[in-house]
Image (cartoon, rainbow, N blue to C red; front, side):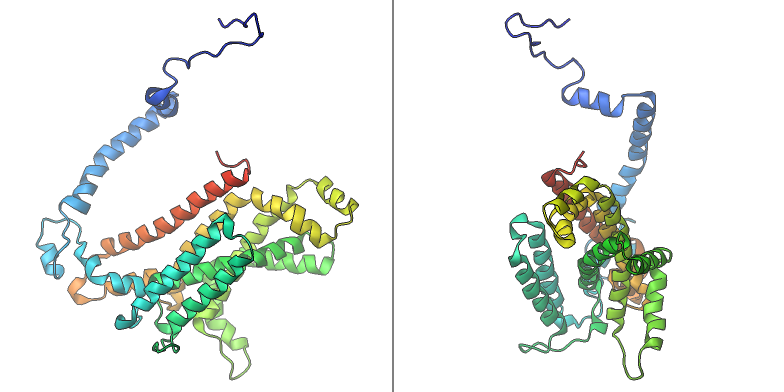
Amino acid sequence: MNTPSPDTGLIAAQPAPVGKAGVIGWVRTRLFASPLNILMTVLVVWLLMMGLPPLLEWALLKANFTAGNAQECRAGPGGACWAFIREKYRLILFGTYPYDEQWRPLLATLVLLAVIVCSAIRRFWNLWLVAIWVVGLACVACLMWGGLAGLTYVENTRWGGLPLTLILSTFGIAFAFPVGVILALGRRSNMPVIKALCVVYIEIIRGVPLISLLFMSSVMLPLFLPEGMSIDKLLRAQIAIIMFAAAYVAETVRGGLQAIDRGQIEGAQSIGLTYWQTMRKIVLPQALRIVIPPLVSIFIALFKDTSLVVVIGIYDLTLSAKASLSDPLWRGFSIEAYLFISLIYFIFCFAMSRYSKQLESRLDTGYSH
C-alpha cells in the first residue's frame, strides 16, 4: 500500500506494475485483455499462418520478373508474372499519351506532387502558396498540352493513367472544398431563399451516386448547351466530381459549425466584428479543425472515386490497366495489373491518412488518439 511522504504529503513514484510495461505488457493489454481479444488474436494469427506463406510464395518466391511474353511466364513455376508490369507499366501509368513524349506526363506528375507536398508544409501557408499553385499548374498545363516551347501539342483525349487521376482528384479537392464551405454557410443562413437553394442542392447531389452525375455530365449536359457550343468531356467529368464532393464537404463542415458555441459568435458581435470577419477569424478555423478526420475521409474517397470516369471513356488509371490487358501477347494477368494499381491507390490514400493524423495532433483537435 502506498503511503504519503511525511515531508510533502505526496505519494512517492512507484515502478510500473509487473506485466503492464514493455513488450509483454503491450501484448497482454492489447492482444489478450479479454476472452474476445484472445479469440480474435488467435483467429488473426491462424489466418496469417494459412494465407501469408502461399501469398509470399506466389508473389515473390515463384514469381517471374524477366519473361518476354505470356508463354514464358506460364511456363515458369506458377507464381506471379511481374514481367507483365515491367512490360506494360508505361501504358498503365500514362495511358495512350504518345510513347516518345511520356517524359512530359511524368514530369507533370512530379510537379503536381511537389505542389501538393508544399501545401502540406505549414511554413508555406501564406501568399507564397498561391504563387506556388499558379506556377505549378501552369507548368503542368504546359507539359500535358504542349504547343509551347517546342513541345508537341497533345489533346487531353490522349491523357490517361496516373497523371489524369491526380489531376481529377487534385482539382476536385481544391475546388470542392471552398464550394462546400460556402454551401455549409448558405445552409445555415438566415435568408430563406439562399438557405433553400443550398438545401435543395445538397440533398439532390447527396441523393444520387457519382456515376449518375458523370453520365449526366457526359450525355445530358451537351443537350442543354446553345447550338455550336460544347464543353470538353474531361472538363464535364471534372465539374461532376466537384459538384459531388462539394455536397459532402458542405454537410461535414455544417456539422463542425454546429459544434461551435453560440457564445463565441455573440462575443465576436459584441466587439464589432462583421459576419464574414466572425466566420473567417473565429468560427471557421475552429469548425474546420474539428472536422479534419471526416474531411480527409471525403478526400480519400474522392481520390478513389475518380476511377468511375472509366464509364464515360476517360483513360484513368483503371482503364489504362484494363487496356494493358488487351495485348494478345500478355493476356491473363489481370491480377498483377490490378494489384499494381491497387498499390498506387493505397500509397496515396495512406499518405493522406497519415498526414491527417499528424495535422490533427499539430492543431490539437482532440482526435489524435
